[in-house]
Image 1 (cartoon, helix red, strand yellow):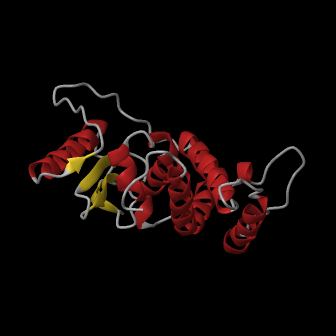
Image 2 (cartoon, rainbow, N blue to C red; image 1 turned 180 degrees about the horizontal axis):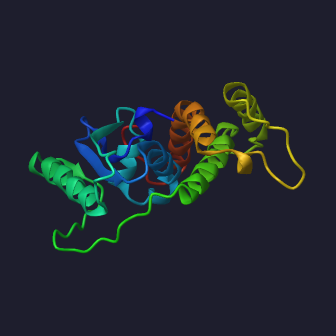
Image 3 (tube, rainbow, N blue to C red; image 1 turned 30 degrees about the vertical axis):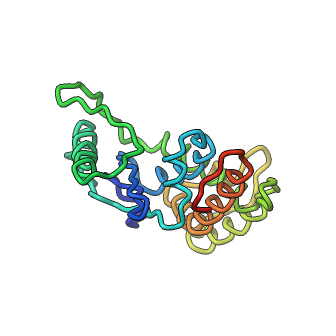
Length: 211
């Protein structure tokens, strides 16, 4: 599929009011990387600045540089990520991401096969459906959300989504179909996971003053 969130390159998670930024790179696409960031918010609650950045309502996810060309090497992604980091550092931003780029370092090249990416897609779709089915931070069954999406896939791609014994529908979908599902889920997931994360964080003894 073609969509701006399916591009790869350098990105920032940025909040001008807090003067905080996270700089990152993705050699796959922005969509799956950002979904994984959002799913991992809970794991970084002990890092107050990072948590402040991700949970503040004025924080934005932005693309800094698109690097879709196959001529880019793994080293290039880290080099441009470092350039972005240095830019924000010179401007006096608080940077919550970690960077250890070595200009002389050797970086093994990535393989652009789809198998691992498709597994990441499936995992993300399952996680997103659970989050969207959640009420008051208690998980409920996300299968209803998936069933509705399967019907959309069937209409758009003509795919047979009838369940086969011993095989899930999700396991039979191809890359384009999975990307369609991710893009359909992402806008709702983005708001829901942030709301749930804020609720969970507010249960902690140490809370953020801007809530």
